[in-house]
Length: 115
Image 1 (tube, one colour):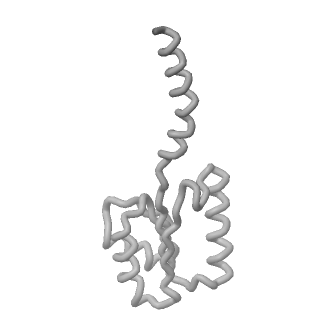
Image 2 (tube, rainbow, N blue to C red):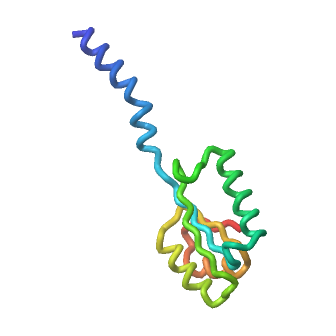
Image 3 (tube, one colour):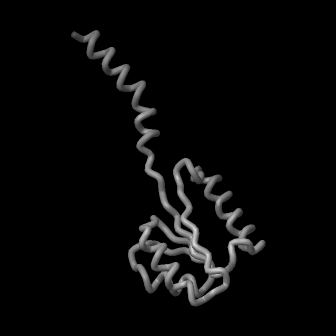
């Protein structure tokens, strides 16, 4: 009986890292920007942000999903985009621009907003 318990324990221990990896939850980071997604400054800033996340072990497609919204410079779209993004229930939201921050704060008090 001890041999069977031992073998069962070894099998469970060997499978544990695979199960733990498969159960790693994907985090969702929302991004709301006032500008246009093709703006060179925004691209460089976003690239730096994703590189910093990767340096911390958060890689898009592996354990993080980025949910991006860009207003294209149209301030009138910010409120609708903020509402849409908050509706997706991301774990945290990156606000790029004061208008984006204000619109997001009007939509949620529970999702952390960083800018």
